[in-house]
Amino acid sequence: MTFEVGQQLPGIEVGPIAHGGHFVARHEGRVLFVRGALSGELVDVRITEVNRRFARAEVSAVHRPSPHRIKPPCPVAGRCGGCDFQHIAPAHTRELKRQVVVELLDHLGGYHFDGEVEEVPPSPGGWRTRMRYHVGARGQLGLTAHRSREVVELPPQGCFLAVESIARPQVPAGVKPGQQVLAVAADSGTRVVAAAGASGVVTEKVDARQYQVAVDGFWQAHRGAAKVLTDAVIEGLHPQPGELVADLYCGVGLFAAALAERGCHVLGVEGDREATELARRNVVGADFLRGDVGLLVDRLPQRIDLIVLDPPRTGAGAEVMRHLLERQPRAVGYVACDPAALGRDLGTAAQLGYRPTSVTAFDVFPLTHHVECVAILEPTA
Image (tube, rainbow, N blue to C red):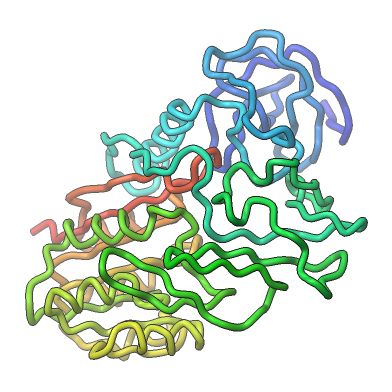
C-alpha cells in the first residue's frame, strides 16, 4: 500500500511506545509512527509524513481509549509541538519513559535497567525556567506546531510547562514577526524577556553554590534538575579530596563546582567560549579548556581518577569513550539526555571493560517524551 499525506486510515490498533514520543502501529504491513495515541487504543489516524520505510500519522479520532488517556491540561495541546504526552496521565508518562529506557539500554548497551523514572517536582506543569517563544505573523507569541514552522499562539493562561512568571510574557519592543523571544526565570529571582541572541548573564543557584549563566546559554530547564543531577553524580562517584577529575562538556561548571567543593582537582572541557569563561568565574581554582572534546581528549592527563560526561544529545561517541577509558578512571559519571545515545556509549564501554553499577532515570521533562539518565560506570575487573 502507498501512503499519501492527508490520507485518513480508520480502525488502527496502536502498539508499543517508540523512542521519540510516538507509538508504533501497522496498516497492511506498513509501519506507522502515531502521535497522540496510547498503546492498546483503537483509533483513526491522518497521515502527516511519508517515508520510504514508514509513515508518520496523528490521531484524528479515538474509538477505544486507553484507561491512561486524560483531557489535556492545555487547550492547545496536540496542535502545539511543545508536548508529546499531555493526553496521558502523568504517572503513566513515566512508565512509558521507563519502557523506552529498558528497551534502548538493553538493545544498544546490553544493560538491564530495573529502576523507575523518578518524578522531580515541580511536576507536571510549571517547571520550565527557560523558554524560547516564536513571534507569529500577527505578532502573537507562541510555540511552533509539531514538525512545522506554524506558530501556535499561547492560550490565555500561558504555557502550561513554564513557571508562572514567564508563562505568557509580552513581546519585547522591537521584536518582529518571525523572530524569537527568550524568557528566563532564574533561580535567583531574576526574570529576563528579550530577543533571542540577547547578551547578559543571570545567576542560578544549586544549594549554596551560585553560577553565572548566559541569558542565551545552556542551563537545565527544569527548576529541580540541576540539583538532582548533581546529587546523583556526586553520590555515585564518591569523590575524594585530591582526586583528579575530568569534567567534559562541562558548560558553566555545574558538576565542576560540586567536585571542587569536595577537594578534587578539576579539569573541565567545554566547546562554547562564553560558557568556558563563565565556568572559570564560577569555579575558582579549577582549570578549563575551550574546544571540542573529541579534539582535546588527547590533551588530558594519562591518568585520571574520575570522569564526568554530560554530552549533547548525540552522546560522547566511541572514539571519545575509548580515549577516556584508556586512562583507567576509578569511575565515570555519565549524564545523558537521550537513552539511545547512552545505550550506544554503554555498549562501547562494555567492550573496554567498564559496566554500569547503577543507572538512575529522572523525569525532568514532564509531559514530553524526554528523559534524563545518570549512569555510574566502573571497571569490571
